[in-house]
Amino acid sequence: MRLFKNVNIDFIGKRKAAAFLSMLLLLIGLVSVVINKGLALSIDFTGGTIVQLRFDELMEISEARSILSENGFENVDITTIGAIEDNEILIKTQLTGANLKEKLDNAFSSKNYETRRVEQVGPKIGNELRTDAVRSIGVALLLILIYIGFRFDFYYAIGSVAALIHDILITLGLFAVFQFEVNLTTVAAFLTIVGYSLNDTIVVFDRIRENIKINARDKLEFIVNKSLNATLSRTVITSFTTLMVVAVLYLGGLETIKLFALALLFGILIGTFSSIFVASPVMIFFENRAGRKLAKK
Image (cartoon, helix red, strand yellow):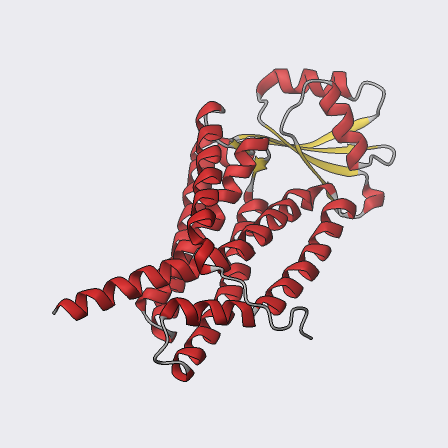
């Protein structure tokens, strides 16, 4: 199915404007991180307390979250434990000590409940999780660099990884701007974004490689533009259909996956942009630079 026929958009001619937009978004994200003194990290990374409660009657997650929010609990992660009829919930909060027990009693004063488990998560564990999260993303980018370098060439690999880093940083920046919580679920979303964006970039690079063989005498900019226009229908249709599914997850899904879906919403939009305006222009820059050096020699 071709959504666009005979389209001839000068994507490469607009790379400076696209680069300005990317730099602006990165700067906004960086300023937000500085103003807010970092990202809104969850208990997974900062440490806190995990409390398991069992109620005598059904307790919906939305109701529990509303009650806790009204009683001064911030950045609380709530999930159900076991079957729905067990009426058990797991609360992750940054509050600790006797103050936590008192606040829980005040919040659920009208409910009959039993405390099944209280577990402290120290900052050391949080730091280890944070390090593991950064390391997992770093390893993924390194393996992608090796894979693309082997399948295409090193300059294609640089373009791909530059686009992926661009996607992750801007998505993190948007989380900083709106102060959305960053937890292990959102880290999984970032890894998903890496895979999605890479897939789109490889499709474009594959078409570029085919067109280079056919149009060997043409300038690289012309070939890349031709390839981007040829794959535009596929890019738009794939991104739109994926966005629809993720939007449904965000609007109608459980509260526990909303941040995952939100990160994917940001990532898909930014990844589609980067596969057109970041990966290919970066590859062109390094290919032309290498060509000029070879010509001088």
